[in-house]
Amino acid sequence: MSKLNSQRIALVAMSVVVGFAVLIGALVAPEGLSAGDRNPDGSYAGTKLKGTTPAQWRLSWHEDPAHEATISWTTAANPESSTLFYDTQPRGGELAKYAQHVSATSGRYSDDEWKLWYNHAELAELKPSTTYWFVMVSDGASSREFHFVTAPDGDTDFKLLYGGDSRSDRDSRRIMNRRMRTLLEEDAEILALAHGGDYVGEGDELEDWVEWMTDHELTVTKDGRMLPVIPARGNHEASGPIYDEIWNTPGKKDGNFYASKIGSEFLLITLNTNISAGGNQADFLETTLKDNTKIRWQIANYHRPAYPAVKSPGSALEHWVPLFEKHNLDIAFESDGHTLKRTCGIRDGKPDKTGVVYIGEGGLGVKQRTPKDDRWYFKDGVTASTLHVQKIAVTKETLTVESITDEGEVYDTYTAKVRKR
Image 1 (cartoon, rainbow, N blue to C red):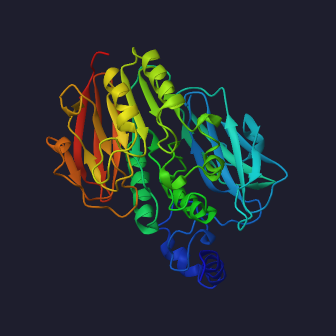
Image 2: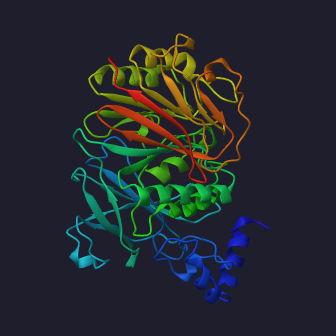
Image 3: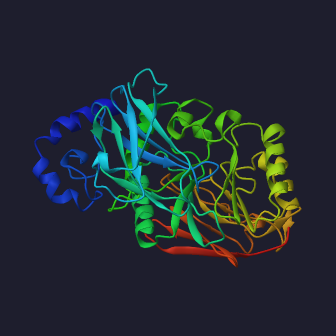
């Protein structure tokens, strides 16, 4: 039976067991959801895709998260108009009270089997370090009110989450989404999730993305705070158009690589291991590092590892690692291996305390592999086969990365100190 038919059957059955779902659903679903947002067994089903009702909400940051954001949603029908209403004060969903609104761009996802539409509302001229409350509307059908916090533009402390490889195992993905929601509820300094790629198993199949976007709703806190995503493209997203339709083409048409400045002293460089690591992308990386030598913290995010815990090295080893070392990059975050890892400092192909540390390998839901912990760069490092997400704490003195398991345990902590460039 196809996933689509199963979904339809579940929706029919749902009407019979709504009372049961209401009773137990609050234990497993975010506050404010209706009975229609739960499966017959009470588990989370996501907002129903019905007509122009906004569903599968997501928020992405690209180059300038202090002043810009894209809020996106999916509709099951082609809307004549989609609008985002927003304000710096909560308005309880009363549209006339919101101080600002912006029209969204809509289009059909590139999939012949699914008739679904994306809607992207691009926000500009936002105020830094400000909470914005918003409602998504398509042809009069409204979402509930959500909110998010813009990035700072000054020299201030903040936190990010990092993780990759949320594909293939929905149960584990939902566990990790709830873990990230809990982290966000417990720590208001967390601003966004830098995703290392491989969101889904088949990036050219909208059905996989529908499941991913539905599960992503679980990252929204009980009071409606949405976690922005700073996306990177993984190998399972391939080179197809759906990734750009989900995330509103991060990096524009230049190849999905870009740099995000968060505050005045932190630079996140997002790279794309699905295309040539040399050429224009290597030129972009070198120029970005060279032009930002005075910024205190510099990190990179990309999918295929240069120093892998399971597989063979990707092309980043040849094209990017020399630039990382030349400009003293603080940390490179990598995914793809399906295991937890932190290397020692590496310079010139050998252990060096002044070198670059590589962290990550992807644990946001995919089944974990056994790491090859006998590789030389894991001496004085860490490996483990466990689901995980990294929490990055940015201060004026230190850059601290905690690797947190699905059960909330801090498995590993690494702290970098400010260094010269």
